[in-house]
Amino acid sequence: MAVQTLIQNGRVVDGTGNPWFYADVLLDGDRIAAVVPPGQFPSAYAEAVVDASGMVVCPGFIDIQSHSIVPLMIDGRSLSKVLQGVTTEIMGEGWTPAPFGGRIAEPIPISGFARRLTGWQEEARNWRRFGDWLDALARHGVSPNIGSFIAGGTVRQYAKGFDPTPATPDELTLMQRVVAEAMEDGAFGVAYALIYPPDVFATTEEIIYLCRVVARYGGLYITHLRSEADQLFPALDEAFRIGREAGLPVEIYHLKAAGRRNWAKAPEAIARIEAARAAGLDVTADMYPYQAAGTGLASVLPPRYTALPDFYTRLNDPAFRAEIRAATLHVSGDWEPLADLAGPEGVMPVGMEHPSLRPYVGKRLAEIAAMRGQDWLDAALDLLAIEGRNIPTVYFMMDEQNIRLQLQQPWIKISTDAGGLDPAWAAEHGPVHPRAYGTYTRVLGYYVREERVLTLEDAVRKMSSAVADRLGLRDRGQIRPGFFADVVVFDPQQVADRATFTDPHQLSVGIRDVWINGVRVVADGRHAGALPGRVVRGAGAR
Image 1 (cartoon, rainbow, N blue to C red):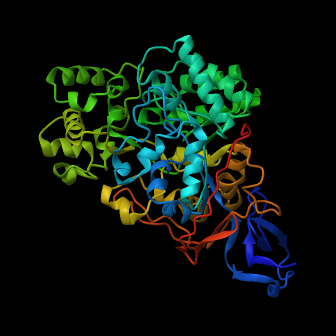
Image 2: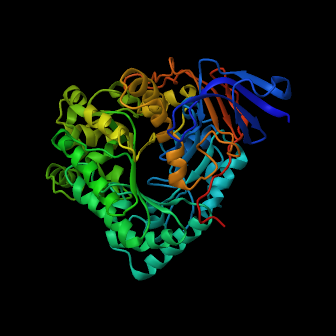
Protein backbone atom coordinates (compact mmCIF):
# COMPACT_ATOMS: atom_id res chain seq x y z
CA MET A 1 0.00 0.00 0.00
CA ALA A 2 1.35 3.40 -1.02
CA VAL A 3 -0.05 6.71 0.27
CA GLN A 4 0.47 10.35 -0.56
CA THR A 5 1.19 11.64 2.95
CA LEU A 6 2.39 10.05 6.19
CA ILE A 7 2.10 12.22 9.31
CA GLN A 8 4.39 10.63 11.90
CA ASN A 9 4.97 10.81 15.65
CA GLY A 10 2.12 13.17 16.52
CA ARG A 11 -0.26 13.20 19.46
CA VAL A 12 -3.61 12.47 17.85
CA VAL A 13 -6.63 14.29 19.26
CA ASP A 14 -9.25 12.61 17.11
CA GLY A 15 -12.11 15.08 17.59
CA THR A 16 -14.43 12.77 19.53
CA GLY A 17 -13.39 14.06 22.95
CA ASN A 18 -11.51 10.85 23.71
CA PRO A 19 -8.04 11.11 25.30
CA TRP A 20 -5.14 11.82 22.95
CA PHE A 21 -2.93 8.96 21.74
CA TYR A 22 0.26 8.57 19.72
CA ALA A 23 -0.34 7.44 16.16
CA ASP A 24 0.68 7.95 12.56
CA VAL A 25 -1.95 9.28 10.19
CA LEU A 26 -1.99 8.27 6.52
CA LEU A 27 -3.61 10.49 3.90
CA ASP A 28 -4.37 9.23 0.41
CA GLY A 29 -6.30 11.20 -2.17
CA ASP A 30 -8.90 13.25 -0.36
CA ARG A 31 -9.36 10.81 2.54
CA ILE A 32 -7.71 9.59 5.71
CA ALA A 33 -6.47 6.17 4.67
CA ALA A 34 -5.47 4.84 8.09
CA VAL A 35 -4.56 5.70 11.67
CA VAL A 36 -1.88 3.27 12.85
CA PRO A 37 0.52 2.81 15.79
CA PRO A 38 3.72 4.88 15.50
CA GLY A 39 6.28 3.40 13.14
CA GLN A 40 4.00 0.68 11.81
CA PHE A 41 3.74 2.08 8.30
CA PRO A 42 7.04 2.17 6.32
CA SER A 43 7.89 5.74 5.34
CA ALA A 44 9.28 4.46 2.04
CA TYR A 45 5.72 3.84 0.90
CA ALA A 46 4.68 7.47 1.33
CA GLU A 47 5.20 10.20 -1.24
CA ALA A 48 5.59 12.78 1.55
CA VAL A 49 6.55 12.24 5.18
CA VAL A 50 5.70 14.91 7.76
CA ASP A 51 7.27 14.70 11.21
CA ALA A 52 4.77 15.80 13.85
CA SER A 53 6.96 15.15 16.89
CA GLY A 54 5.81 17.37 19.75
CA MET A 55 2.75 18.38 17.76
CA VAL A 56 -0.97 17.70 18.00
CA VAL A 57 -2.68 16.14 15.00
CA CYS A 58 -6.41 16.84 14.94
CA PRO A 59 -9.36 17.28 12.58
CA GLY A 60 -9.81 20.62 10.87
CA PHE A 61 -12.09 23.09 12.60
CA ILE A 62 -15.59 23.80 11.28
CA ASP A 63 -16.84 27.37 11.74
CA ILE A 64 -20.63 27.20 12.03
CA GLN A 65 -20.93 31.01 12.01
CA SER A 66 -18.71 32.34 9.28
CA HIS A 67 -19.11 35.72 7.59
CA SER A 68 -16.71 34.96 4.75
CA ILE A 69 -19.20 35.54 1.94
CA VAL A 70 -17.54 38.71 0.63
CA PRO A 71 -13.98 37.93 1.85
CA LEU A 72 -13.95 34.68 -0.14
CA MET A 73 -14.89 36.60 -3.28
CA ILE A 74 -11.96 38.93 -2.65
CA ASP A 75 -9.48 36.26 -1.63
CA GLY A 76 -10.32 32.57 -1.76
CA ARG A 77 -7.47 31.66 0.61
CA SER A 78 -9.36 32.78 3.76
CA LEU A 79 -5.97 33.39 5.32
CA SER A 80 -6.94 34.37 8.86
CA LYS A 81 -9.26 31.39 9.19
CA VAL A 82 -7.02 28.71 7.68
CA LEU A 83 -4.14 29.86 9.89
CA GLN A 84 -6.41 29.19 12.86
CA GLY A 85 -6.97 25.63 11.63
CA VAL A 86 -10.38 26.24 10.03
CA THR A 87 -11.01 23.87 7.13
CA THR A 88 -14.78 24.38 6.66
CA GLU A 89 -16.81 27.60 6.81
CA ILE A 90 -20.59 27.64 7.21
CA MET A 91 -22.24 30.95 6.36
CA GLY A 92 -25.75 32.37 6.30
CA GLU A 93 -26.49 34.45 9.41
CA GLY A 94 -28.42 37.53 8.40
CA TRP A 95 -27.68 37.49 4.68
CA THR A 96 -26.83 35.31 1.71
CA PRO A 97 -26.24 36.68 -1.80
CA ALA A 98 -28.49 33.99 -3.28
CA PRO A 99 -31.09 33.49 -4.38
CA PHE A 100 -31.24 36.85 -6.13
CA GLY A 101 -34.64 38.03 -7.31
CA GLY A 102 -38.01 39.08 -5.98
CA ARG A 103 -37.75 42.39 -4.13
CA ILE A 104 -33.99 42.21 -3.54
CA ALA A 105 -32.45 45.26 -5.23
CA GLU A 106 -28.77 44.17 -5.29
CA PRO A 107 -27.33 40.71 -4.65
CA ILE A 108 -24.20 42.15 -2.99
CA PRO A 109 -24.53 45.54 -1.27
CA ILE A 110 -21.34 47.41 -2.10
CA SER A 111 -19.95 48.69 1.18
CA GLY A 112 -16.98 47.90 3.41
CA PHE A 113 -14.91 45.01 2.08
CA ALA A 114 -17.38 44.57 -0.79
CA ARG A 115 -15.96 47.71 -2.40
CA ARG A 116 -12.97 45.59 -3.38
CA LEU A 117 -15.07 43.27 -5.51
CA THR A 118 -14.66 43.28 -9.26
CA GLY A 119 -16.90 41.32 -11.57
CA TRP A 120 -18.89 39.52 -8.90
CA GLN A 121 -21.93 41.81 -8.90
CA GLU A 122 -22.98 40.95 -12.45
CA GLU A 123 -22.26 37.27 -11.92
CA ALA A 124 -24.34 37.35 -8.75
CA ARG A 125 -27.36 38.61 -10.68
CA ASN A 126 -27.52 35.16 -12.25
CA TRP A 127 -27.66 33.36 -8.89
CA ARG A 128 -31.37 32.62 -9.06
CA ARG A 129 -31.05 29.59 -6.82
CA PHE A 130 -29.32 29.33 -3.46
CA GLY A 131 -26.80 26.76 -4.69
CA ASP A 132 -25.61 28.91 -7.61
CA TRP A 133 -23.56 31.09 -5.24
CA LEU A 134 -21.73 28.27 -3.48
CA ASP A 135 -21.02 26.51 -6.76
CA ALA A 136 -19.60 29.75 -8.20
CA LEU A 137 -17.29 30.23 -5.22
CA ALA A 138 -15.96 26.68 -5.51
CA ARG A 139 -15.50 27.11 -9.26
CA HIS A 140 -13.45 30.27 -8.74
CA GLY A 141 -11.41 28.48 -6.09
CA VAL A 142 -11.42 28.62 -2.28
CA SER A 143 -9.14 27.06 0.31
CA PRO A 144 -11.75 25.99 2.89
CA ASN A 145 -14.78 23.87 2.31
CA ILE A 146 -17.90 26.02 2.18
CA GLY A 147 -21.56 25.61 3.03
CA SER A 148 -24.40 27.75 4.29
CA PHE A 149 -27.77 28.15 5.86
CA ILE A 150 -30.35 30.11 3.89
CA ALA A 151 -30.66 33.49 5.59
CA GLY A 152 -34.14 34.18 6.90
CA GLY A 153 -33.58 37.86 6.19
CA THR A 154 -32.82 37.13 2.55
CA VAL A 155 -35.96 35.00 2.28
CA ARG A 156 -38.08 37.79 3.75
CA GLN A 157 -36.41 40.42 1.61
CA TYR A 158 -37.08 38.30 -1.49
CA ALA A 159 -40.82 38.41 -0.75
CA LYS A 160 -41.27 41.75 1.07
CA GLY A 161 -38.15 43.86 0.78
CA PHE A 162 -37.80 45.78 4.04
CA ASP A 163 -41.55 46.16 4.54
CA PRO A 164 -42.08 45.69 8.31
CA THR A 165 -45.69 44.49 8.05
CA PRO A 166 -46.67 40.85 8.66
CA ALA A 167 -46.33 38.56 5.67
CA THR A 168 -49.47 37.91 3.62
CA PRO A 169 -50.52 34.37 2.66
CA ASP A 170 -49.12 34.87 -0.85
CA GLU A 171 -45.83 36.18 0.56
CA LEU A 172 -45.60 33.23 2.93
CA THR A 173 -46.14 30.86 0.03
CA LEU A 174 -43.34 32.55 -1.91
CA MET A 175 -41.00 32.40 1.08
CA GLN A 176 -41.87 28.74 1.56
CA ARG A 177 -40.84 28.03 -2.04
CA VAL A 178 -37.56 29.92 -1.65
CA VAL A 179 -36.72 27.95 1.51
CA ALA A 180 -37.62 24.60 -0.08
CA GLU A 181 -35.41 25.28 -3.09
CA ALA A 182 -32.53 26.31 -0.84
CA MET A 183 -32.86 23.12 1.20
CA GLU A 184 -32.80 21.07 -2.00
CA ASP A 185 -29.65 22.94 -3.01
CA GLY A 186 -27.98 21.91 0.24
CA ALA A 187 -28.74 24.60 2.83
CA PHE A 188 -28.26 23.28 6.36
CA GLY A 189 -31.43 25.01 7.50
CA VAL A 190 -32.66 28.56 7.95
CA ALA A 191 -30.71 31.23 9.88
CA TYR A 192 -32.28 34.29 11.46
CA ALA A 193 -30.59 37.34 12.98
CA LEU A 194 -33.55 38.69 14.90
CA ILE A 195 -32.16 42.08 15.98
CA TYR A 196 -31.50 43.26 12.41
CA PRO A 197 -33.89 44.30 9.65
CA PRO A 198 -35.60 42.67 7.89
CA ASP A 199 -35.34 39.60 10.20
CA VAL A 200 -36.57 41.67 13.16
CA PHE A 201 -39.91 42.13 11.39
CA ALA A 202 -40.58 38.38 11.16
CA THR A 203 -43.17 37.14 13.64
CA THR A 204 -42.70 33.93 15.58
CA GLU A 205 -45.54 32.40 13.59
CA GLU A 206 -43.86 33.30 10.29
CA ILE A 207 -40.63 31.65 11.40
CA ILE A 208 -42.47 28.51 12.54
CA TYR A 209 -44.24 28.32 9.17
CA LEU A 210 -40.94 28.38 7.29
CA CYS A 211 -39.16 26.11 9.76
CA ARG A 212 -41.74 23.41 9.09
CA VAL A 213 -40.44 23.38 5.53
CA VAL A 214 -36.87 23.12 6.85
CA ALA A 215 -37.91 20.22 9.09
CA ARG A 216 -39.15 18.22 6.11
CA TYR A 217 -35.62 18.31 4.71
CA GLY A 218 -33.89 17.41 7.98
CA GLY A 219 -32.52 20.91 8.57
CA LEU A 220 -31.86 23.18 11.56
CA TYR A 221 -33.26 26.42 12.88
CA ILE A 222 -30.23 28.54 13.82
CA THR A 223 -30.76 31.93 15.38
CA HIS A 224 -29.26 35.11 16.67
CA LEU A 225 -31.83 35.44 19.43
CA ARG A 226 -34.32 38.30 19.41
CA SER A 227 -32.60 39.50 22.57
CA GLU A 228 -29.32 38.57 24.22
CA ALA A 229 -29.84 41.06 27.01
CA ASP A 230 -32.87 42.45 28.84
CA GLN A 231 -35.29 40.04 27.11
CA LEU A 232 -32.94 37.05 27.02
CA PHE A 233 -35.34 34.63 28.69
CA PRO A 234 -38.36 35.44 26.47
CA ALA A 235 -36.02 35.20 23.46
CA LEU A 236 -34.92 31.72 24.55
CA ASP A 237 -38.56 30.75 25.04
CA GLU A 238 -39.31 31.90 21.50
CA ALA A 239 -36.47 29.77 20.09
CA PHE A 240 -37.68 26.76 22.08
CA ARG A 241 -41.23 27.28 20.85
CA ILE A 242 -40.09 27.45 17.24
CA GLY A 243 -38.19 24.20 17.63
CA ARG A 244 -41.07 22.40 19.30
CA GLU A 245 -43.87 23.60 17.02
CA ALA A 246 -41.88 23.24 13.81
CA GLY A 247 -40.37 19.93 14.88
CA LEU A 248 -36.69 20.62 14.22
CA PRO A 249 -33.42 21.10 16.13
CA VAL A 250 -32.43 24.56 17.36
CA GLU A 251 -28.94 26.09 17.37
CA ILE A 252 -28.31 29.39 19.16
CA TYR A 253 -25.67 31.64 17.63
CA HIS A 254 -23.04 33.19 19.96
CA LEU A 255 -24.82 32.58 23.26
CA LYS A 256 -24.29 35.45 25.69
CA ALA A 257 -25.82 37.59 28.41
CA ALA A 258 -25.08 41.12 27.20
CA GLY A 259 -24.80 44.21 29.36
CA ARG A 260 -23.59 44.36 32.96
CA ARG A 261 -27.15 44.40 34.27
CA ASN A 262 -27.74 41.05 32.54
CA TRP A 263 -24.55 39.17 33.43
CA ALA A 264 -26.26 37.35 36.29
CA LYS A 265 -28.67 35.81 33.76
CA ALA A 266 -26.04 33.56 32.17
CA PRO A 267 -26.32 30.64 34.65
CA GLU A 268 -30.11 30.77 34.38
CA ALA A 269 -29.92 30.80 30.56
CA ILE A 270 -27.74 27.70 30.71
CA ALA A 271 -30.19 26.08 33.13
CA ARG A 272 -33.10 26.84 30.80
CA ILE A 273 -31.30 25.26 27.86
CA GLU A 274 -30.50 22.23 30.01
CA ALA A 275 -34.16 21.99 31.04
CA ALA A 276 -35.33 22.21 27.42
CA ARG A 277 -32.88 19.46 26.47
CA ALA A 278 -34.06 17.31 29.39
CA ALA A 279 -37.62 17.76 28.15
CA GLY A 280 -36.65 16.42 24.72
CA LEU A 281 -35.87 19.51 22.65
CA ASP A 282 -32.68 19.22 20.59
CA VAL A 283 -31.19 22.64 21.37
CA THR A 284 -27.50 23.54 21.47
CA ALA A 285 -25.42 26.71 21.07
CA ASP A 286 -22.09 28.11 19.96
CA MET A 287 -19.93 31.03 21.11
CA TYR A 288 -16.79 33.07 20.51
CA PRO A 289 -14.27 33.60 23.35
CA TYR A 290 -14.32 37.39 23.70
CA GLN A 291 -15.88 39.93 26.04
CA ALA A 292 -16.96 42.16 23.16
CA ALA A 293 -19.47 41.67 20.38
CA GLY A 294 -19.15 43.10 16.90
CA THR A 295 -21.80 44.54 14.60
CA GLY A 296 -22.69 47.88 13.03
CA LEU A 297 -22.89 51.29 14.72
CA ALA A 298 -26.45 51.58 13.44
CA SER A 299 -27.39 48.95 16.03
CA VAL A 300 -27.45 51.70 18.66
CA LEU A 301 -30.67 52.85 16.94
CA PRO A 302 -34.14 51.27 16.58
CA PRO A 303 -34.15 48.95 13.53
CA ARG A 304 -37.41 50.36 12.16
CA TYR A 305 -35.40 53.44 11.20
CA THR A 306 -32.21 51.81 9.99
CA ALA A 307 -34.26 49.61 7.63
CA LEU A 308 -35.48 52.63 5.67
CA PRO A 309 -33.94 52.74 2.17
CA ASP A 310 -32.99 56.42 2.52
CA PHE A 311 -31.90 56.17 6.16
CA TYR A 312 -28.37 57.56 5.76
CA THR A 313 -29.37 60.53 3.61
CA ARG A 314 -32.28 61.39 5.91
CA LEU A 315 -29.91 61.67 8.86
CA ASN A 316 -29.28 65.24 7.67
CA ASP A 317 -32.96 66.11 8.22
CA PRO A 318 -33.34 67.73 11.70
CA ALA A 319 -36.92 66.49 12.11
CA PHE A 320 -35.94 62.90 11.25
CA ARG A 321 -32.99 63.04 13.63
CA ALA A 322 -35.17 64.36 16.42
CA GLU A 323 -37.59 61.48 15.91
CA ILE A 324 -34.78 58.93 15.98
CA ARG A 325 -33.27 60.57 19.03
CA ALA A 326 -36.49 60.33 20.99
CA ALA A 327 -37.03 56.69 20.00
CA THR A 328 -33.44 55.72 20.83
CA LEU A 329 -33.40 57.29 24.27
CA HIS A 330 -36.73 55.70 25.12
CA VAL A 331 -35.72 52.07 25.69
CA SER A 332 -39.04 50.42 24.89
CA GLY A 333 -38.05 46.76 25.17
CA ASP A 334 -38.99 45.84 21.59
CA TRP A 335 -35.44 46.22 20.22
CA GLU A 336 -31.89 45.60 21.48
CA PRO A 337 -30.36 48.97 22.56
CA LEU A 338 -26.68 48.17 22.27
CA ALA A 339 -25.38 51.57 23.37
CA ASP A 340 -27.55 51.40 26.46
CA LEU A 341 -26.16 47.92 27.21
CA ALA A 342 -22.49 48.68 26.60
CA GLY A 343 -22.57 52.37 27.55
CA PRO A 344 -20.98 54.95 25.19
CA GLU A 345 -17.62 54.12 26.79
CA GLY A 346 -18.08 50.49 25.65
CA VAL A 347 -18.88 51.30 22.01
CA MET A 348 -15.85 51.38 19.69
CA PRO A 349 -16.48 52.25 16.01
CA VAL A 350 -13.64 50.72 14.01
CA GLY A 351 -14.55 50.56 10.32
CA MET A 352 -14.69 54.20 9.24
CA GLU A 353 -13.27 55.01 5.81
CA HIS A 354 -14.28 58.66 5.28
CA PRO A 355 -11.09 60.77 5.60
CA SER A 356 -12.63 63.16 8.12
CA LEU A 357 -13.50 60.25 10.42
CA ARG A 358 -10.20 58.38 10.34
CA PRO A 359 -8.91 60.14 13.51
CA TYR A 360 -11.76 58.51 15.43
CA VAL A 361 -11.05 54.91 14.36
CA GLY A 362 -10.60 52.68 17.41
CA LYS A 363 -11.70 55.31 19.92
CA ARG A 364 -14.71 54.79 22.18
CA LEU A 365 -17.93 56.58 21.32
CA ALA A 366 -17.78 58.54 24.59
CA GLU A 367 -14.31 59.80 23.67
CA ILE A 368 -15.39 60.66 20.12
CA ALA A 369 -18.37 62.61 21.47
CA ALA A 370 -16.10 64.57 23.82
CA MET A 371 -13.70 65.36 20.97
CA ARG A 372 -16.63 66.66 18.91
CA GLY A 373 -18.31 68.52 21.79
CA GLN A 374 -21.49 66.45 21.46
CA ASP A 375 -23.43 63.87 23.39
CA TRP A 376 -22.90 60.25 22.32
CA LEU A 377 -26.10 59.95 20.29
CA ASP A 378 -25.52 63.05 18.16
CA ALA A 379 -21.96 61.88 17.59
CA ALA A 380 -23.18 58.46 16.45
CA LEU A 381 -25.74 60.00 14.10
CA ASP A 382 -23.09 62.31 12.63
CA LEU A 383 -20.65 59.45 12.07
CA LEU A 384 -23.29 57.43 10.23
CA ALA A 385 -24.38 60.42 8.15
CA ILE A 386 -20.82 61.31 7.13
CA GLU A 387 -19.83 57.71 6.38
CA GLY A 388 -23.06 57.15 4.47
CA ARG A 389 -23.23 53.49 5.48
CA ASN A 390 -23.15 51.33 8.54
CA ILE A 391 -19.86 51.37 10.46
CA PRO A 392 -18.35 48.14 11.86
CA THR A 393 -18.31 48.57 15.64
CA VAL A 394 -17.12 46.64 18.68
CA TYR A 395 -19.38 46.55 21.75
CA PHE A 396 -17.79 45.63 25.10
CA MET A 397 -20.64 44.07 27.07
CA MET A 398 -19.89 40.47 28.17
CA ASP A 399 -18.46 39.03 31.37
CA GLU A 400 -15.27 36.93 31.45
CA GLN A 401 -16.63 34.56 34.08
CA ASN A 402 -19.65 33.84 31.88
CA ILE A 403 -17.35 33.06 28.96
CA ARG A 404 -15.54 30.48 31.10
CA LEU A 405 -18.83 29.02 32.33
CA GLN A 406 -20.19 28.66 28.82
CA LEU A 407 -17.01 27.07 27.47
CA GLN A 408 -17.46 24.23 29.94
CA GLN A 409 -20.95 23.29 28.77
CA PRO A 410 -20.93 20.04 26.74
CA TRP A 411 -23.42 21.36 24.16
CA ILE A 412 -21.44 24.52 23.37
CA LYS A 413 -19.43 24.74 20.15
CA ILE A 414 -16.87 27.34 19.01
CA SER A 415 -17.55 29.77 16.16
CA THR A 416 -16.02 33.03 14.93
CA ASP A 417 -18.93 35.23 13.78
CA ALA A 418 -16.34 36.67 11.37
CA GLY A 419 -14.88 36.44 7.88
CA GLY A 420 -11.51 35.17 6.73
CA LEU A 421 -9.15 38.10 6.09
CA ASP A 422 -5.65 38.89 4.91
CA PRO A 423 -4.01 41.81 6.76
CA ALA A 424 -2.43 42.91 3.46
CA TRP A 425 -5.78 44.14 2.20
CA ALA A 426 -8.11 44.06 5.21
CA ALA A 427 -6.04 46.54 7.24
CA GLU A 428 -6.75 49.23 4.64
CA HIS A 429 -10.36 49.28 5.86
CA GLY A 430 -9.43 49.88 9.49
CA PRO A 431 -9.65 47.66 12.57
CA VAL A 432 -11.99 44.68 12.90
CA HIS A 433 -13.04 42.43 15.75
CA PRO A 434 -10.03 40.21 16.60
CA ARG A 435 -12.19 37.09 16.42
CA ALA A 436 -11.57 37.09 12.65
CA TYR A 437 -7.94 36.24 13.38
CA GLY A 438 -7.85 34.54 16.75
CA THR A 439 -10.99 32.67 17.85
CA TYR A 440 -9.76 29.07 17.73
CA THR A 441 -6.17 29.77 18.67
CA ARG A 442 -7.35 31.87 21.62
CA VAL A 443 -9.32 28.90 22.92
CA LEU A 444 -6.37 26.53 22.44
CA GLY A 445 -3.71 28.87 23.76
CA TYR A 446 -5.43 30.87 26.47
CA TYR A 447 -8.41 28.87 27.71
CA VAL A 448 -6.85 25.39 27.31
CA ARG A 449 -3.09 25.78 27.86
CA GLU A 450 -2.87 28.80 30.14
CA GLU A 451 -6.15 28.90 32.06
CA ARG A 452 -7.16 25.22 31.87
CA VAL A 453 -10.81 26.14 31.61
CA LEU A 454 -11.38 23.06 29.43
CA THR A 455 -9.30 20.15 28.21
CA LEU A 456 -7.53 20.04 24.87
CA GLU A 457 -9.65 17.08 23.81
CA ASP A 458 -12.93 18.81 24.63
CA ALA A 459 -11.85 22.04 22.94
CA VAL A 460 -11.01 20.19 19.72
CA ARG A 461 -14.32 18.32 19.90
CA LYS A 462 -16.21 21.62 20.22
CA MET A 463 -14.41 22.86 17.09
CA SER A 464 -14.72 19.74 14.93
CA SER A 465 -16.90 16.66 15.45
CA ALA A 466 -19.52 18.49 17.54
CA VAL A 467 -20.07 20.90 14.66
CA ALA A 468 -19.93 18.17 12.00
CA ASP A 469 -22.49 16.12 13.90
CA ARG A 470 -24.75 19.14 14.29
CA LEU A 471 -24.64 19.76 10.54
CA GLY A 472 -24.97 16.11 9.57
CA LEU A 473 -21.49 16.00 8.00
CA ARG A 474 -20.89 12.35 8.77
CA ASP A 475 -17.50 12.09 7.07
CA ARG A 476 -15.75 15.18 8.42
CA GLY A 477 -14.70 16.39 11.86
CA GLN A 478 -12.70 13.36 13.06
CA ILE A 479 -9.34 11.72 12.51
CA ARG A 480 -10.84 8.46 11.36
CA PRO A 481 -10.17 6.15 8.38
CA GLY A 482 -12.49 6.92 5.49
CA PHE A 483 -13.17 10.48 6.62
CA PHE A 484 -12.17 13.42 4.44
CA ALA A 485 -8.58 14.46 5.02
CA ASP A 486 -9.22 17.81 6.71
CA VAL A 487 -6.29 17.68 9.12
CA VAL A 488 -4.46 20.20 11.30
CA VAL A 489 -1.02 19.89 12.92
CA PHE A 490 -0.31 22.47 15.64
CA ASP A 491 2.18 23.13 18.40
CA PRO A 492 0.27 22.95 21.71
CA GLN A 493 2.95 25.00 23.47
CA GLN A 494 3.05 27.80 20.92
CA VAL A 495 -0.47 28.04 19.47
CA ALA A 496 -1.88 31.46 20.30
CA ASP A 497 -3.90 34.40 19.03
CA ARG A 498 -2.07 37.66 18.38
CA ALA A 499 -4.98 39.89 17.34
CA THR A 500 -6.17 42.48 19.85
CA PHE A 501 -8.95 45.05 19.82
CA THR A 502 -6.42 47.84 19.30
CA ASP A 503 -4.22 45.92 16.83
CA PRO A 504 -6.44 43.25 15.29
CA HIS A 505 -4.83 42.55 11.91
CA GLN A 506 -2.40 39.94 13.21
CA LEU A 507 -2.41 36.32 12.13
CA SER A 508 -2.40 33.54 14.71
CA VAL A 509 0.71 31.48 15.43
CA GLY A 510 1.30 27.82 16.15
CA ILE A 511 -0.82 26.23 13.40
CA ARG A 512 1.97 24.53 11.47
CA ASP A 513 0.26 22.41 8.80
CA VAL A 514 -3.25 22.15 7.36
CA TRP A 515 -4.65 19.73 4.80
CA ILE A 516 -8.06 20.22 3.20
CA ASN A 517 -9.47 17.34 1.19
CA GLY A 518 -5.98 15.84 1.31
CA VAL A 519 -4.27 18.91 -0.18
CA ARG A 520 -1.67 20.67 1.94
CA VAL A 521 -2.90 24.25 2.27
CA VAL A 522 -0.57 25.35 5.08
CA ALA A 523 3.03 24.12 5.27
CA ASP A 524 5.33 25.15 8.10
CA GLY A 525 2.99 27.98 9.13
CA ARG A 526 2.65 29.52 5.65
CA HIS A 527 -0.31 29.39 3.31
CA ALA A 528 0.70 27.44 0.22
CA GLY A 529 -1.88 29.11 -2.03
CA ALA A 530 -3.84 25.90 -2.65
CA LEU A 531 -7.59 26.21 -3.23
CA PRO A 532 -9.02 22.69 -2.75
CA GLY A 533 -12.23 23.67 -0.94
CA ARG A 534 -15.49 22.00 -1.88
CA VAL A 535 -19.16 22.71 -1.26
CA VAL A 536 -20.62 20.81 1.70
CA ARG A 537 -24.37 20.36 1.77
CA GLY A 538 -27.16 19.57 4.19
CA ALA A 539 -29.31 16.47 4.42
CA GLY A 540 -31.97 17.78 2.05
CA ALA A 541 -29.63 18.25 -0.92
CA ARG A 542 -30.79 16.75 -4.20
